[in-house]
Length: 261
Image: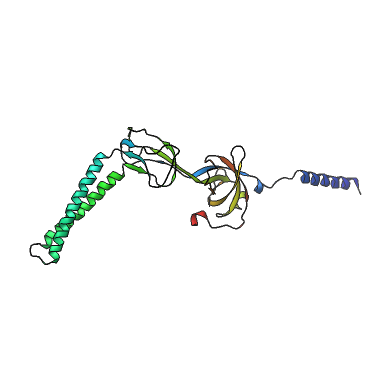
């Protein structure tokens, strides 16, 4: 064997040996960093101003949908609602009495009188509904179940319309959000199951999630695409805001998308 060819063969053997000892992972297997967020995290407010009269929950408490978180002083609204209810009841009774007489072909009731009574009754219904709405707007109800993360005003404090009052967070489901390189995006589809690790003490949490959204467009500056992966978190092990990594695709074929369930 000629010396040059022997040297070439030796070089190839060294290269193969080094590659076998220190394999270079393809880009598709490199973990992709991301951050976790609660699926629902909102700061709630009211459309009216007033004085805080009730704060039935404390920060950290779990609430169900529909429970009242903040109530403003509503004495005037309560009185107006009762007045409109009494007026509505009176107008209904007057209309029903005239209608019964009219249906009995009584000459004492004209059609014009019945029409006016009906109009008065319908106006009273609308005014009572307005009074109910004014009363409802002074009570901040939880739009969904979740944990009270922050309560901003104190009892007796005056608040303005649309001022932040309560931060409500539902941590039972968590988003893992990442901006991915093209080699990841080419392999991901909504509905796929993926493996992730989330930073926690003392050890990272190993979990799985379902791809819920893959942005159809890339950021023009970086070329990255946004992905949202849904994680179930019923025991609260994952703290929203924690960093993590996307490691692998476990299910090659997409499952039913979470949005379609």
